[in-house]
Length: 307
Image 1 (spheres, rainbow, N blue to C red):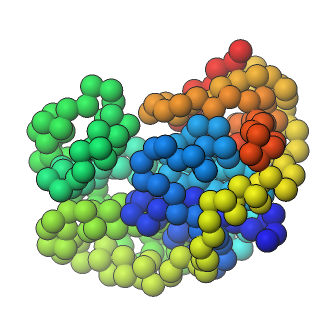
Image 2: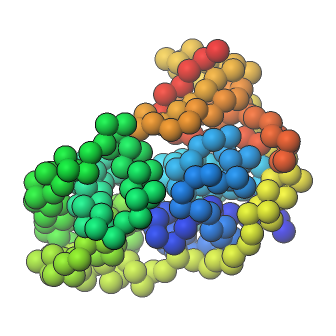
Image 3: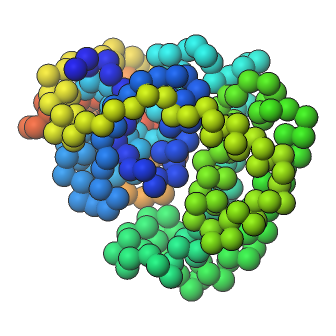
């Protein structure tokens, strides 16, 4: 199997992975799928990521991409046509992502967690609650926010609905990144909310758009095993060249020992800097199962510590 093949490590119910699947569909790409466990431990993913446990993770050979911001940027760089930014507005699109993946996602997540909680296995609740709502997570406190968060979702979905009155997609006649950013949240609400179908009926333009985005599909996927993916990484070579950002406020250079951690919490990933830009930090690390890999993270939303 080619070391340039896209491999997605995720699971079907992951809402955040749905965002990337839509991007793969927009670009008409073929990709390999590794279904990972929904809960730790993830023994055949950790050798690739060094401990990063959020979903999804993209692998291309021995290069491992964490966080959808990093994954989608890489897909756009490698496969620029069709573009995710019809008409330009690249920077503004990433600004929109800070809204959809930030305040809007937290409102949707609160609604979804409360809706799912009566039938959610306790081990899943014990894992996801602190992961998304902090170490002092209380289901009762989250439930108390349900109505206000649902009202927030209603207002924000209303904005999107209003913008779709006169266009097939968010920025016009052609789909782009904004559509993927918004679609996965509509998909999440419809899938997890008991009255999701009824709730969404108040947004007729959004529902028509939802059908158009769904029709795009997810590209062309084929399942492989996690052991296959480890072997691909083991025999591949890191493709990322050395790059230093001389004006970075972080003051880092190639070879610096660092640890990278999501601001939302989770394990640190340690390694040495291979590449640094305003948007991304890439670190080299070694693992006995896969040898040398390069793990990529966005700079925004992550804490980078030096040793």
